[in-house]
Length: 194
Image (cartoon, rainbow, N blue to C red; front, top):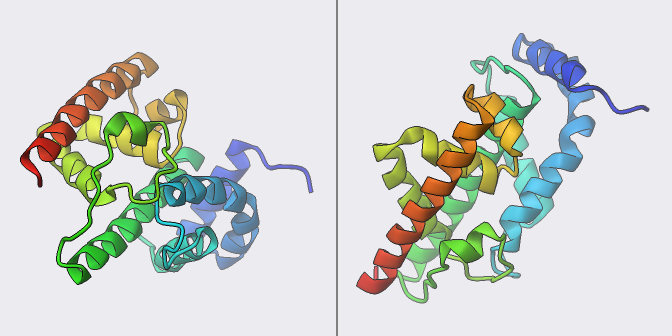
């Protein structure tokens, strides 16, 4: 089967959000490979013995998406952005649960420059990054979304601009400023021992 164009994927997404379950069945194998790559990026920063593996993370995203009816899918990049956000939430929830079970012990802080290079360190502190992103969102939501889409979603500058409906120059500027701000925040947490 030849790969579908972005326009065809968007058509299937819209049909699915209108209630066409057949569209979801056609869409699933078409988006699975990119979702797998996104999940691999997330899982690369997790412990090797993490309870969720790449395929399980994708399945968890699908389970959460199946019941979603309110999303008006704008395009393919919008779909992948939502999936990346769901993956982040799932992993952060697992990390928080693990930290609660350990009563906060053993958390390792990962400098953002390493995280943004998609570090393979197994104990990356996704919770600290998530907290820093929430703080950034309170100050500048768009910059937080740029980090989420680029780092977690693996979207290109162009795709990120498309999702956020801004120019590629704006995305590049926001990406640079957000990384600097987050580095400062994560460095402060490390210095304070939090």
